[in-house]
Amino acid sequence: MKYCTNCGNKLEKGAKFCPNCGTKINFGTSGDILLLKTNENGDTLWTKTYGGNNEERGFSVQQTNDGGYIITGSTETDSTAYDVYLIKTNEIGDTLWTKTFGGDDYDIGFSVRQTTDGGYIIAGQISNPDNYDVYLIKTNENGDTQWTKTYDGNYHTVGRSVFPTTDGGYVITGYTGSNSNGNEVYIIKTDGNGDTLWTKTYGENFTNLGYSVIETSNGMYVVAGTTYPTDNTANVLLIKVDSDGNLVNTIEIPVPNTNRKLVKIFDLTGREIPAPQRNNPYIELYNDGTTQKKMILK
Image 1 (cartoon, helix red, strand yellow):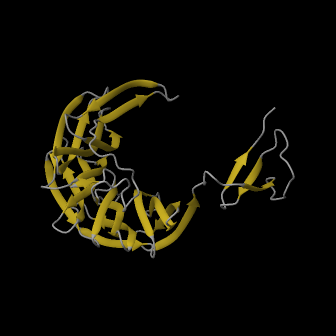
Image 2 (image 1 turned 90 degrees about the horizontal axis):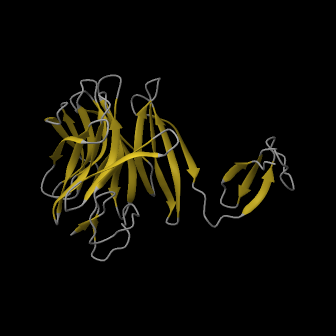
Image 3 (image 1 turned 120 degrees about the vertical axis):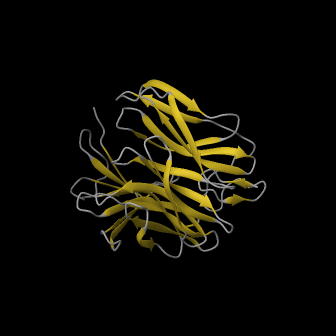
């Protein structure tokens, strides 16, 4: 059995794309985790790779209080199983220690954050007899497990991002649902021990995926993700909820179509103009509803 390296969905032999998240599938390949450090201009300062002879994937990195880095992802344990992979490095990317977590099937770490006690919180997925659950792991500063929690949603449930909240707990986002009925954005709020305070789902009738979550300065939560209103379109999705998970607002941002066509040109006052003038900013409107601000310089 082969699994999607992005969402862990079980794949039929010969599949070219994951039916759950659309990721292109490459069979029979292996790879290492790549960590790349640049300067403020994006020029490479150093690169490091981590892994063995099998397949390793890195999904999240954060700089730690000691100037090093903490990385999470997955490591292949045999041809049909993967574990959550946690790597701690020093400030130049040299490995200090590694840890693995999980069961007997396909387990992935998608997000890692350092906690106020110097330890780490990891969100991802863990396999169950039927499909997948959200997996939350709390470790100490050495990567030793302090506790783990699983959260069961609807069929296939994945945790893609975790954020330590100001009340000492955690907020997690991801998605829950099935291939046939689509997915909903899933948000879980826990206390400091990982016990559930509330869960919410958002989005109906088509696929909605939550990929990142943060707490705002006023105690609300913002989720960034993707929504698929049709089989052929995908939009950026932003969801804001209050401290109890009640929906405040949602915003969909269309992703530009590579085949889009220019419809009209406007100046910044909204007045349609026949052609742009040099050194004057203008806005282009395309037939897919997207816009782009531009300016022609001398």
